[in-house]
Length: 236
Length: 377
Image 1 (cartoon, chains in turn red, orange):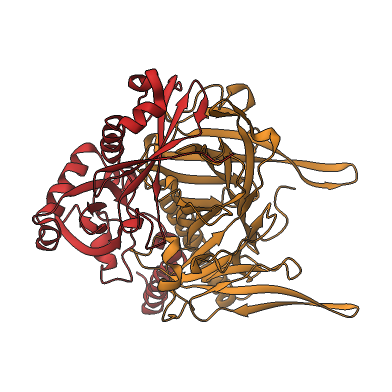
Image 2: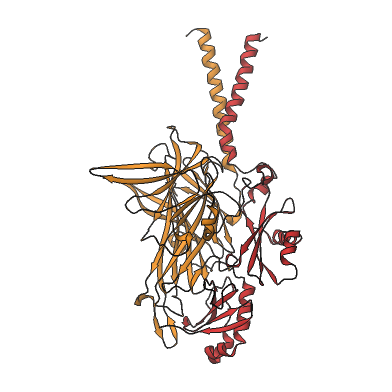
């Protein structure tokens, strides 16, 4: 039979071991994935959003009253839905809440006042956790924007004159194209600082035309806010 | 040894043994799980052959706006050590391209939601250690030259590189993240493809600005010190000044300036605070443009989920919040000055034909007291 001193010593040893284990393990576990959710969920936490998650995030975002207010009676577009690699603190999103949860960032653009809305969606709670207004210059161009710009440009007599008889052959290359097409249209978003610039506070796109590897020195500038097209002549 | 001393020795031996077992157990627990999987998880041990010494674990994603994003990076300095988180998130927040005649002034990262360009065996040859890990991201594991040399004793180093190229209109930007066997992390951007077609001879700058959410040993408890060097007669002084509030810093060529990030709880076996130093890689100059966010080369901000855009740095730092013993984010601006040359191309009729060869700029995050002694010996 163990005497009381032995029992006391064993109890002390257990308590000390537990304490030491906690001290030793805490920093290690602090940087390990959260324990909430299944281990598979933890392994997928930083993977890109699935198509279903993207759709869910967009649905949750557009159902939020702040987002509805932003998009009401206006021409808007969802620019992207991406995994948001957010941290729980600080910002009012608690560390406990974030364990195992995945967040999505939904970006909306509004044409009439060249502004954007960044929306943080908690996919686990199925709710919008935060929204933030952005200037239009912080909202990227979408492929749909580019296709609209190209349609407008190719309908313009000036652009058709610039491109000549090959005008109809120019295409916007597929995002993952493995070959450069012989006639390609490339684009950049125009940011204007000058109030007298026609693109000031407008959604404007610079279109460049690549013909068999060489670029035409003339380009088109398409104002997507006003649906206008003009030509920019190259400078030698 | 008397009985009491013997019992005490057994007691502490048992205690030590239990703790050691627990340490091994929780280290395995901490290291066995990654937060990503499939092609988005890259684990690389070093050296490639022989006994493992160090290891990187990297999670990555192709982001619609920012291109190749590192969504987590952990380094293990020995097989018996736990993984230490280095980056929570690393991304190129912006590439600002102002032309010398004042316009245009492009924001090449903000411009697009296009995918990264495709990569193929031509970009990423197996024979040189390359392997495409998606349709648009290449993984290379390669020799990096000498790690150290001491007369006849020598060690060559190795590194893991992940890269993808952002198609930004007429330009391509190669976004490369390099994870070295010695714990060093290098980010670099290479600008290439075709000069602006409407004015291909106009000089301009490419300024990539990285957002580096450095989280040593967890998100909280990080602090930053500004490292400077000054000559005074025959002597020289190196200083580490704690950064107390959010602000921007100028890189000094003569001052060898850098930013040292440390974590309150992360120490090496010598008891020294472990950290990483942010400094330029391949810097040819430091641009200053009219835009306020270009007025500094490095910035320190306190983490906020929505603060992702480099061009808003002056707003993020006003009013300045404390960045001591908290969750910090570093920002680094690199500069490439592109003065067009005949090698870039030529006019052929009403077209411009030619390819501007790649130009690089970047940063490095160098371990500081992370190892207990010289690694890779």
